[in-house]
Length: 239
Image (cartoon, one colour):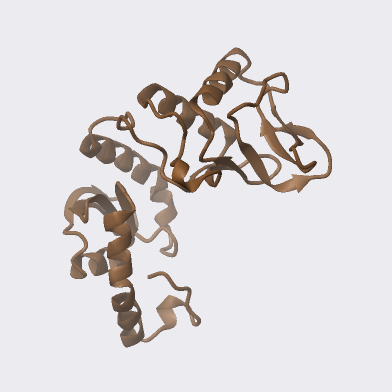
């Protein structure tokens, strides 16, 4: 359901919840059908039950986590996507957060198996809006992309120079644009291999704003389009 509610969801009457869910069902199905999602993750028994009742997915239990609170891990397919779900509610159920590591491993095992290995499919780009928790995570993902695809840019050029990937930095969130080119990523990966501990740097862009991120100040920066969301007052290192 795409709307924030006031009062919060659990304080709405049952008929209000059902009306909101039903009203957004067609919108959700269009997203799943036409926006290229490969995996959907469903958190909590209530969301799992509703998604099956709505005809989005039929669940098959594959694993159990016995440590309290007990949880069931299930899988299913629908609208062209693979769905995974767990019955514990990580957001609100007391003690459920202790299952995060176990769920990560279950996701890794089952999703990789269902999607046919841990390599990205040939001829694919990153999904728009993919977020990485650190510069190191971004570099590793770009390394896999470089090894596993022949794409010339990380995103779909019909979106022009739009932000495509995002990542956390010591100076706040940053974006890597859709038109960032394979040749630039190759230079970045080569530089990172030679100098794995070298910091990146924030410099002035062509308009004088200090928000352009470069991995090597001696590089041409051609084809590399990374920017902080909030400009700094002066150039500085970035980690």
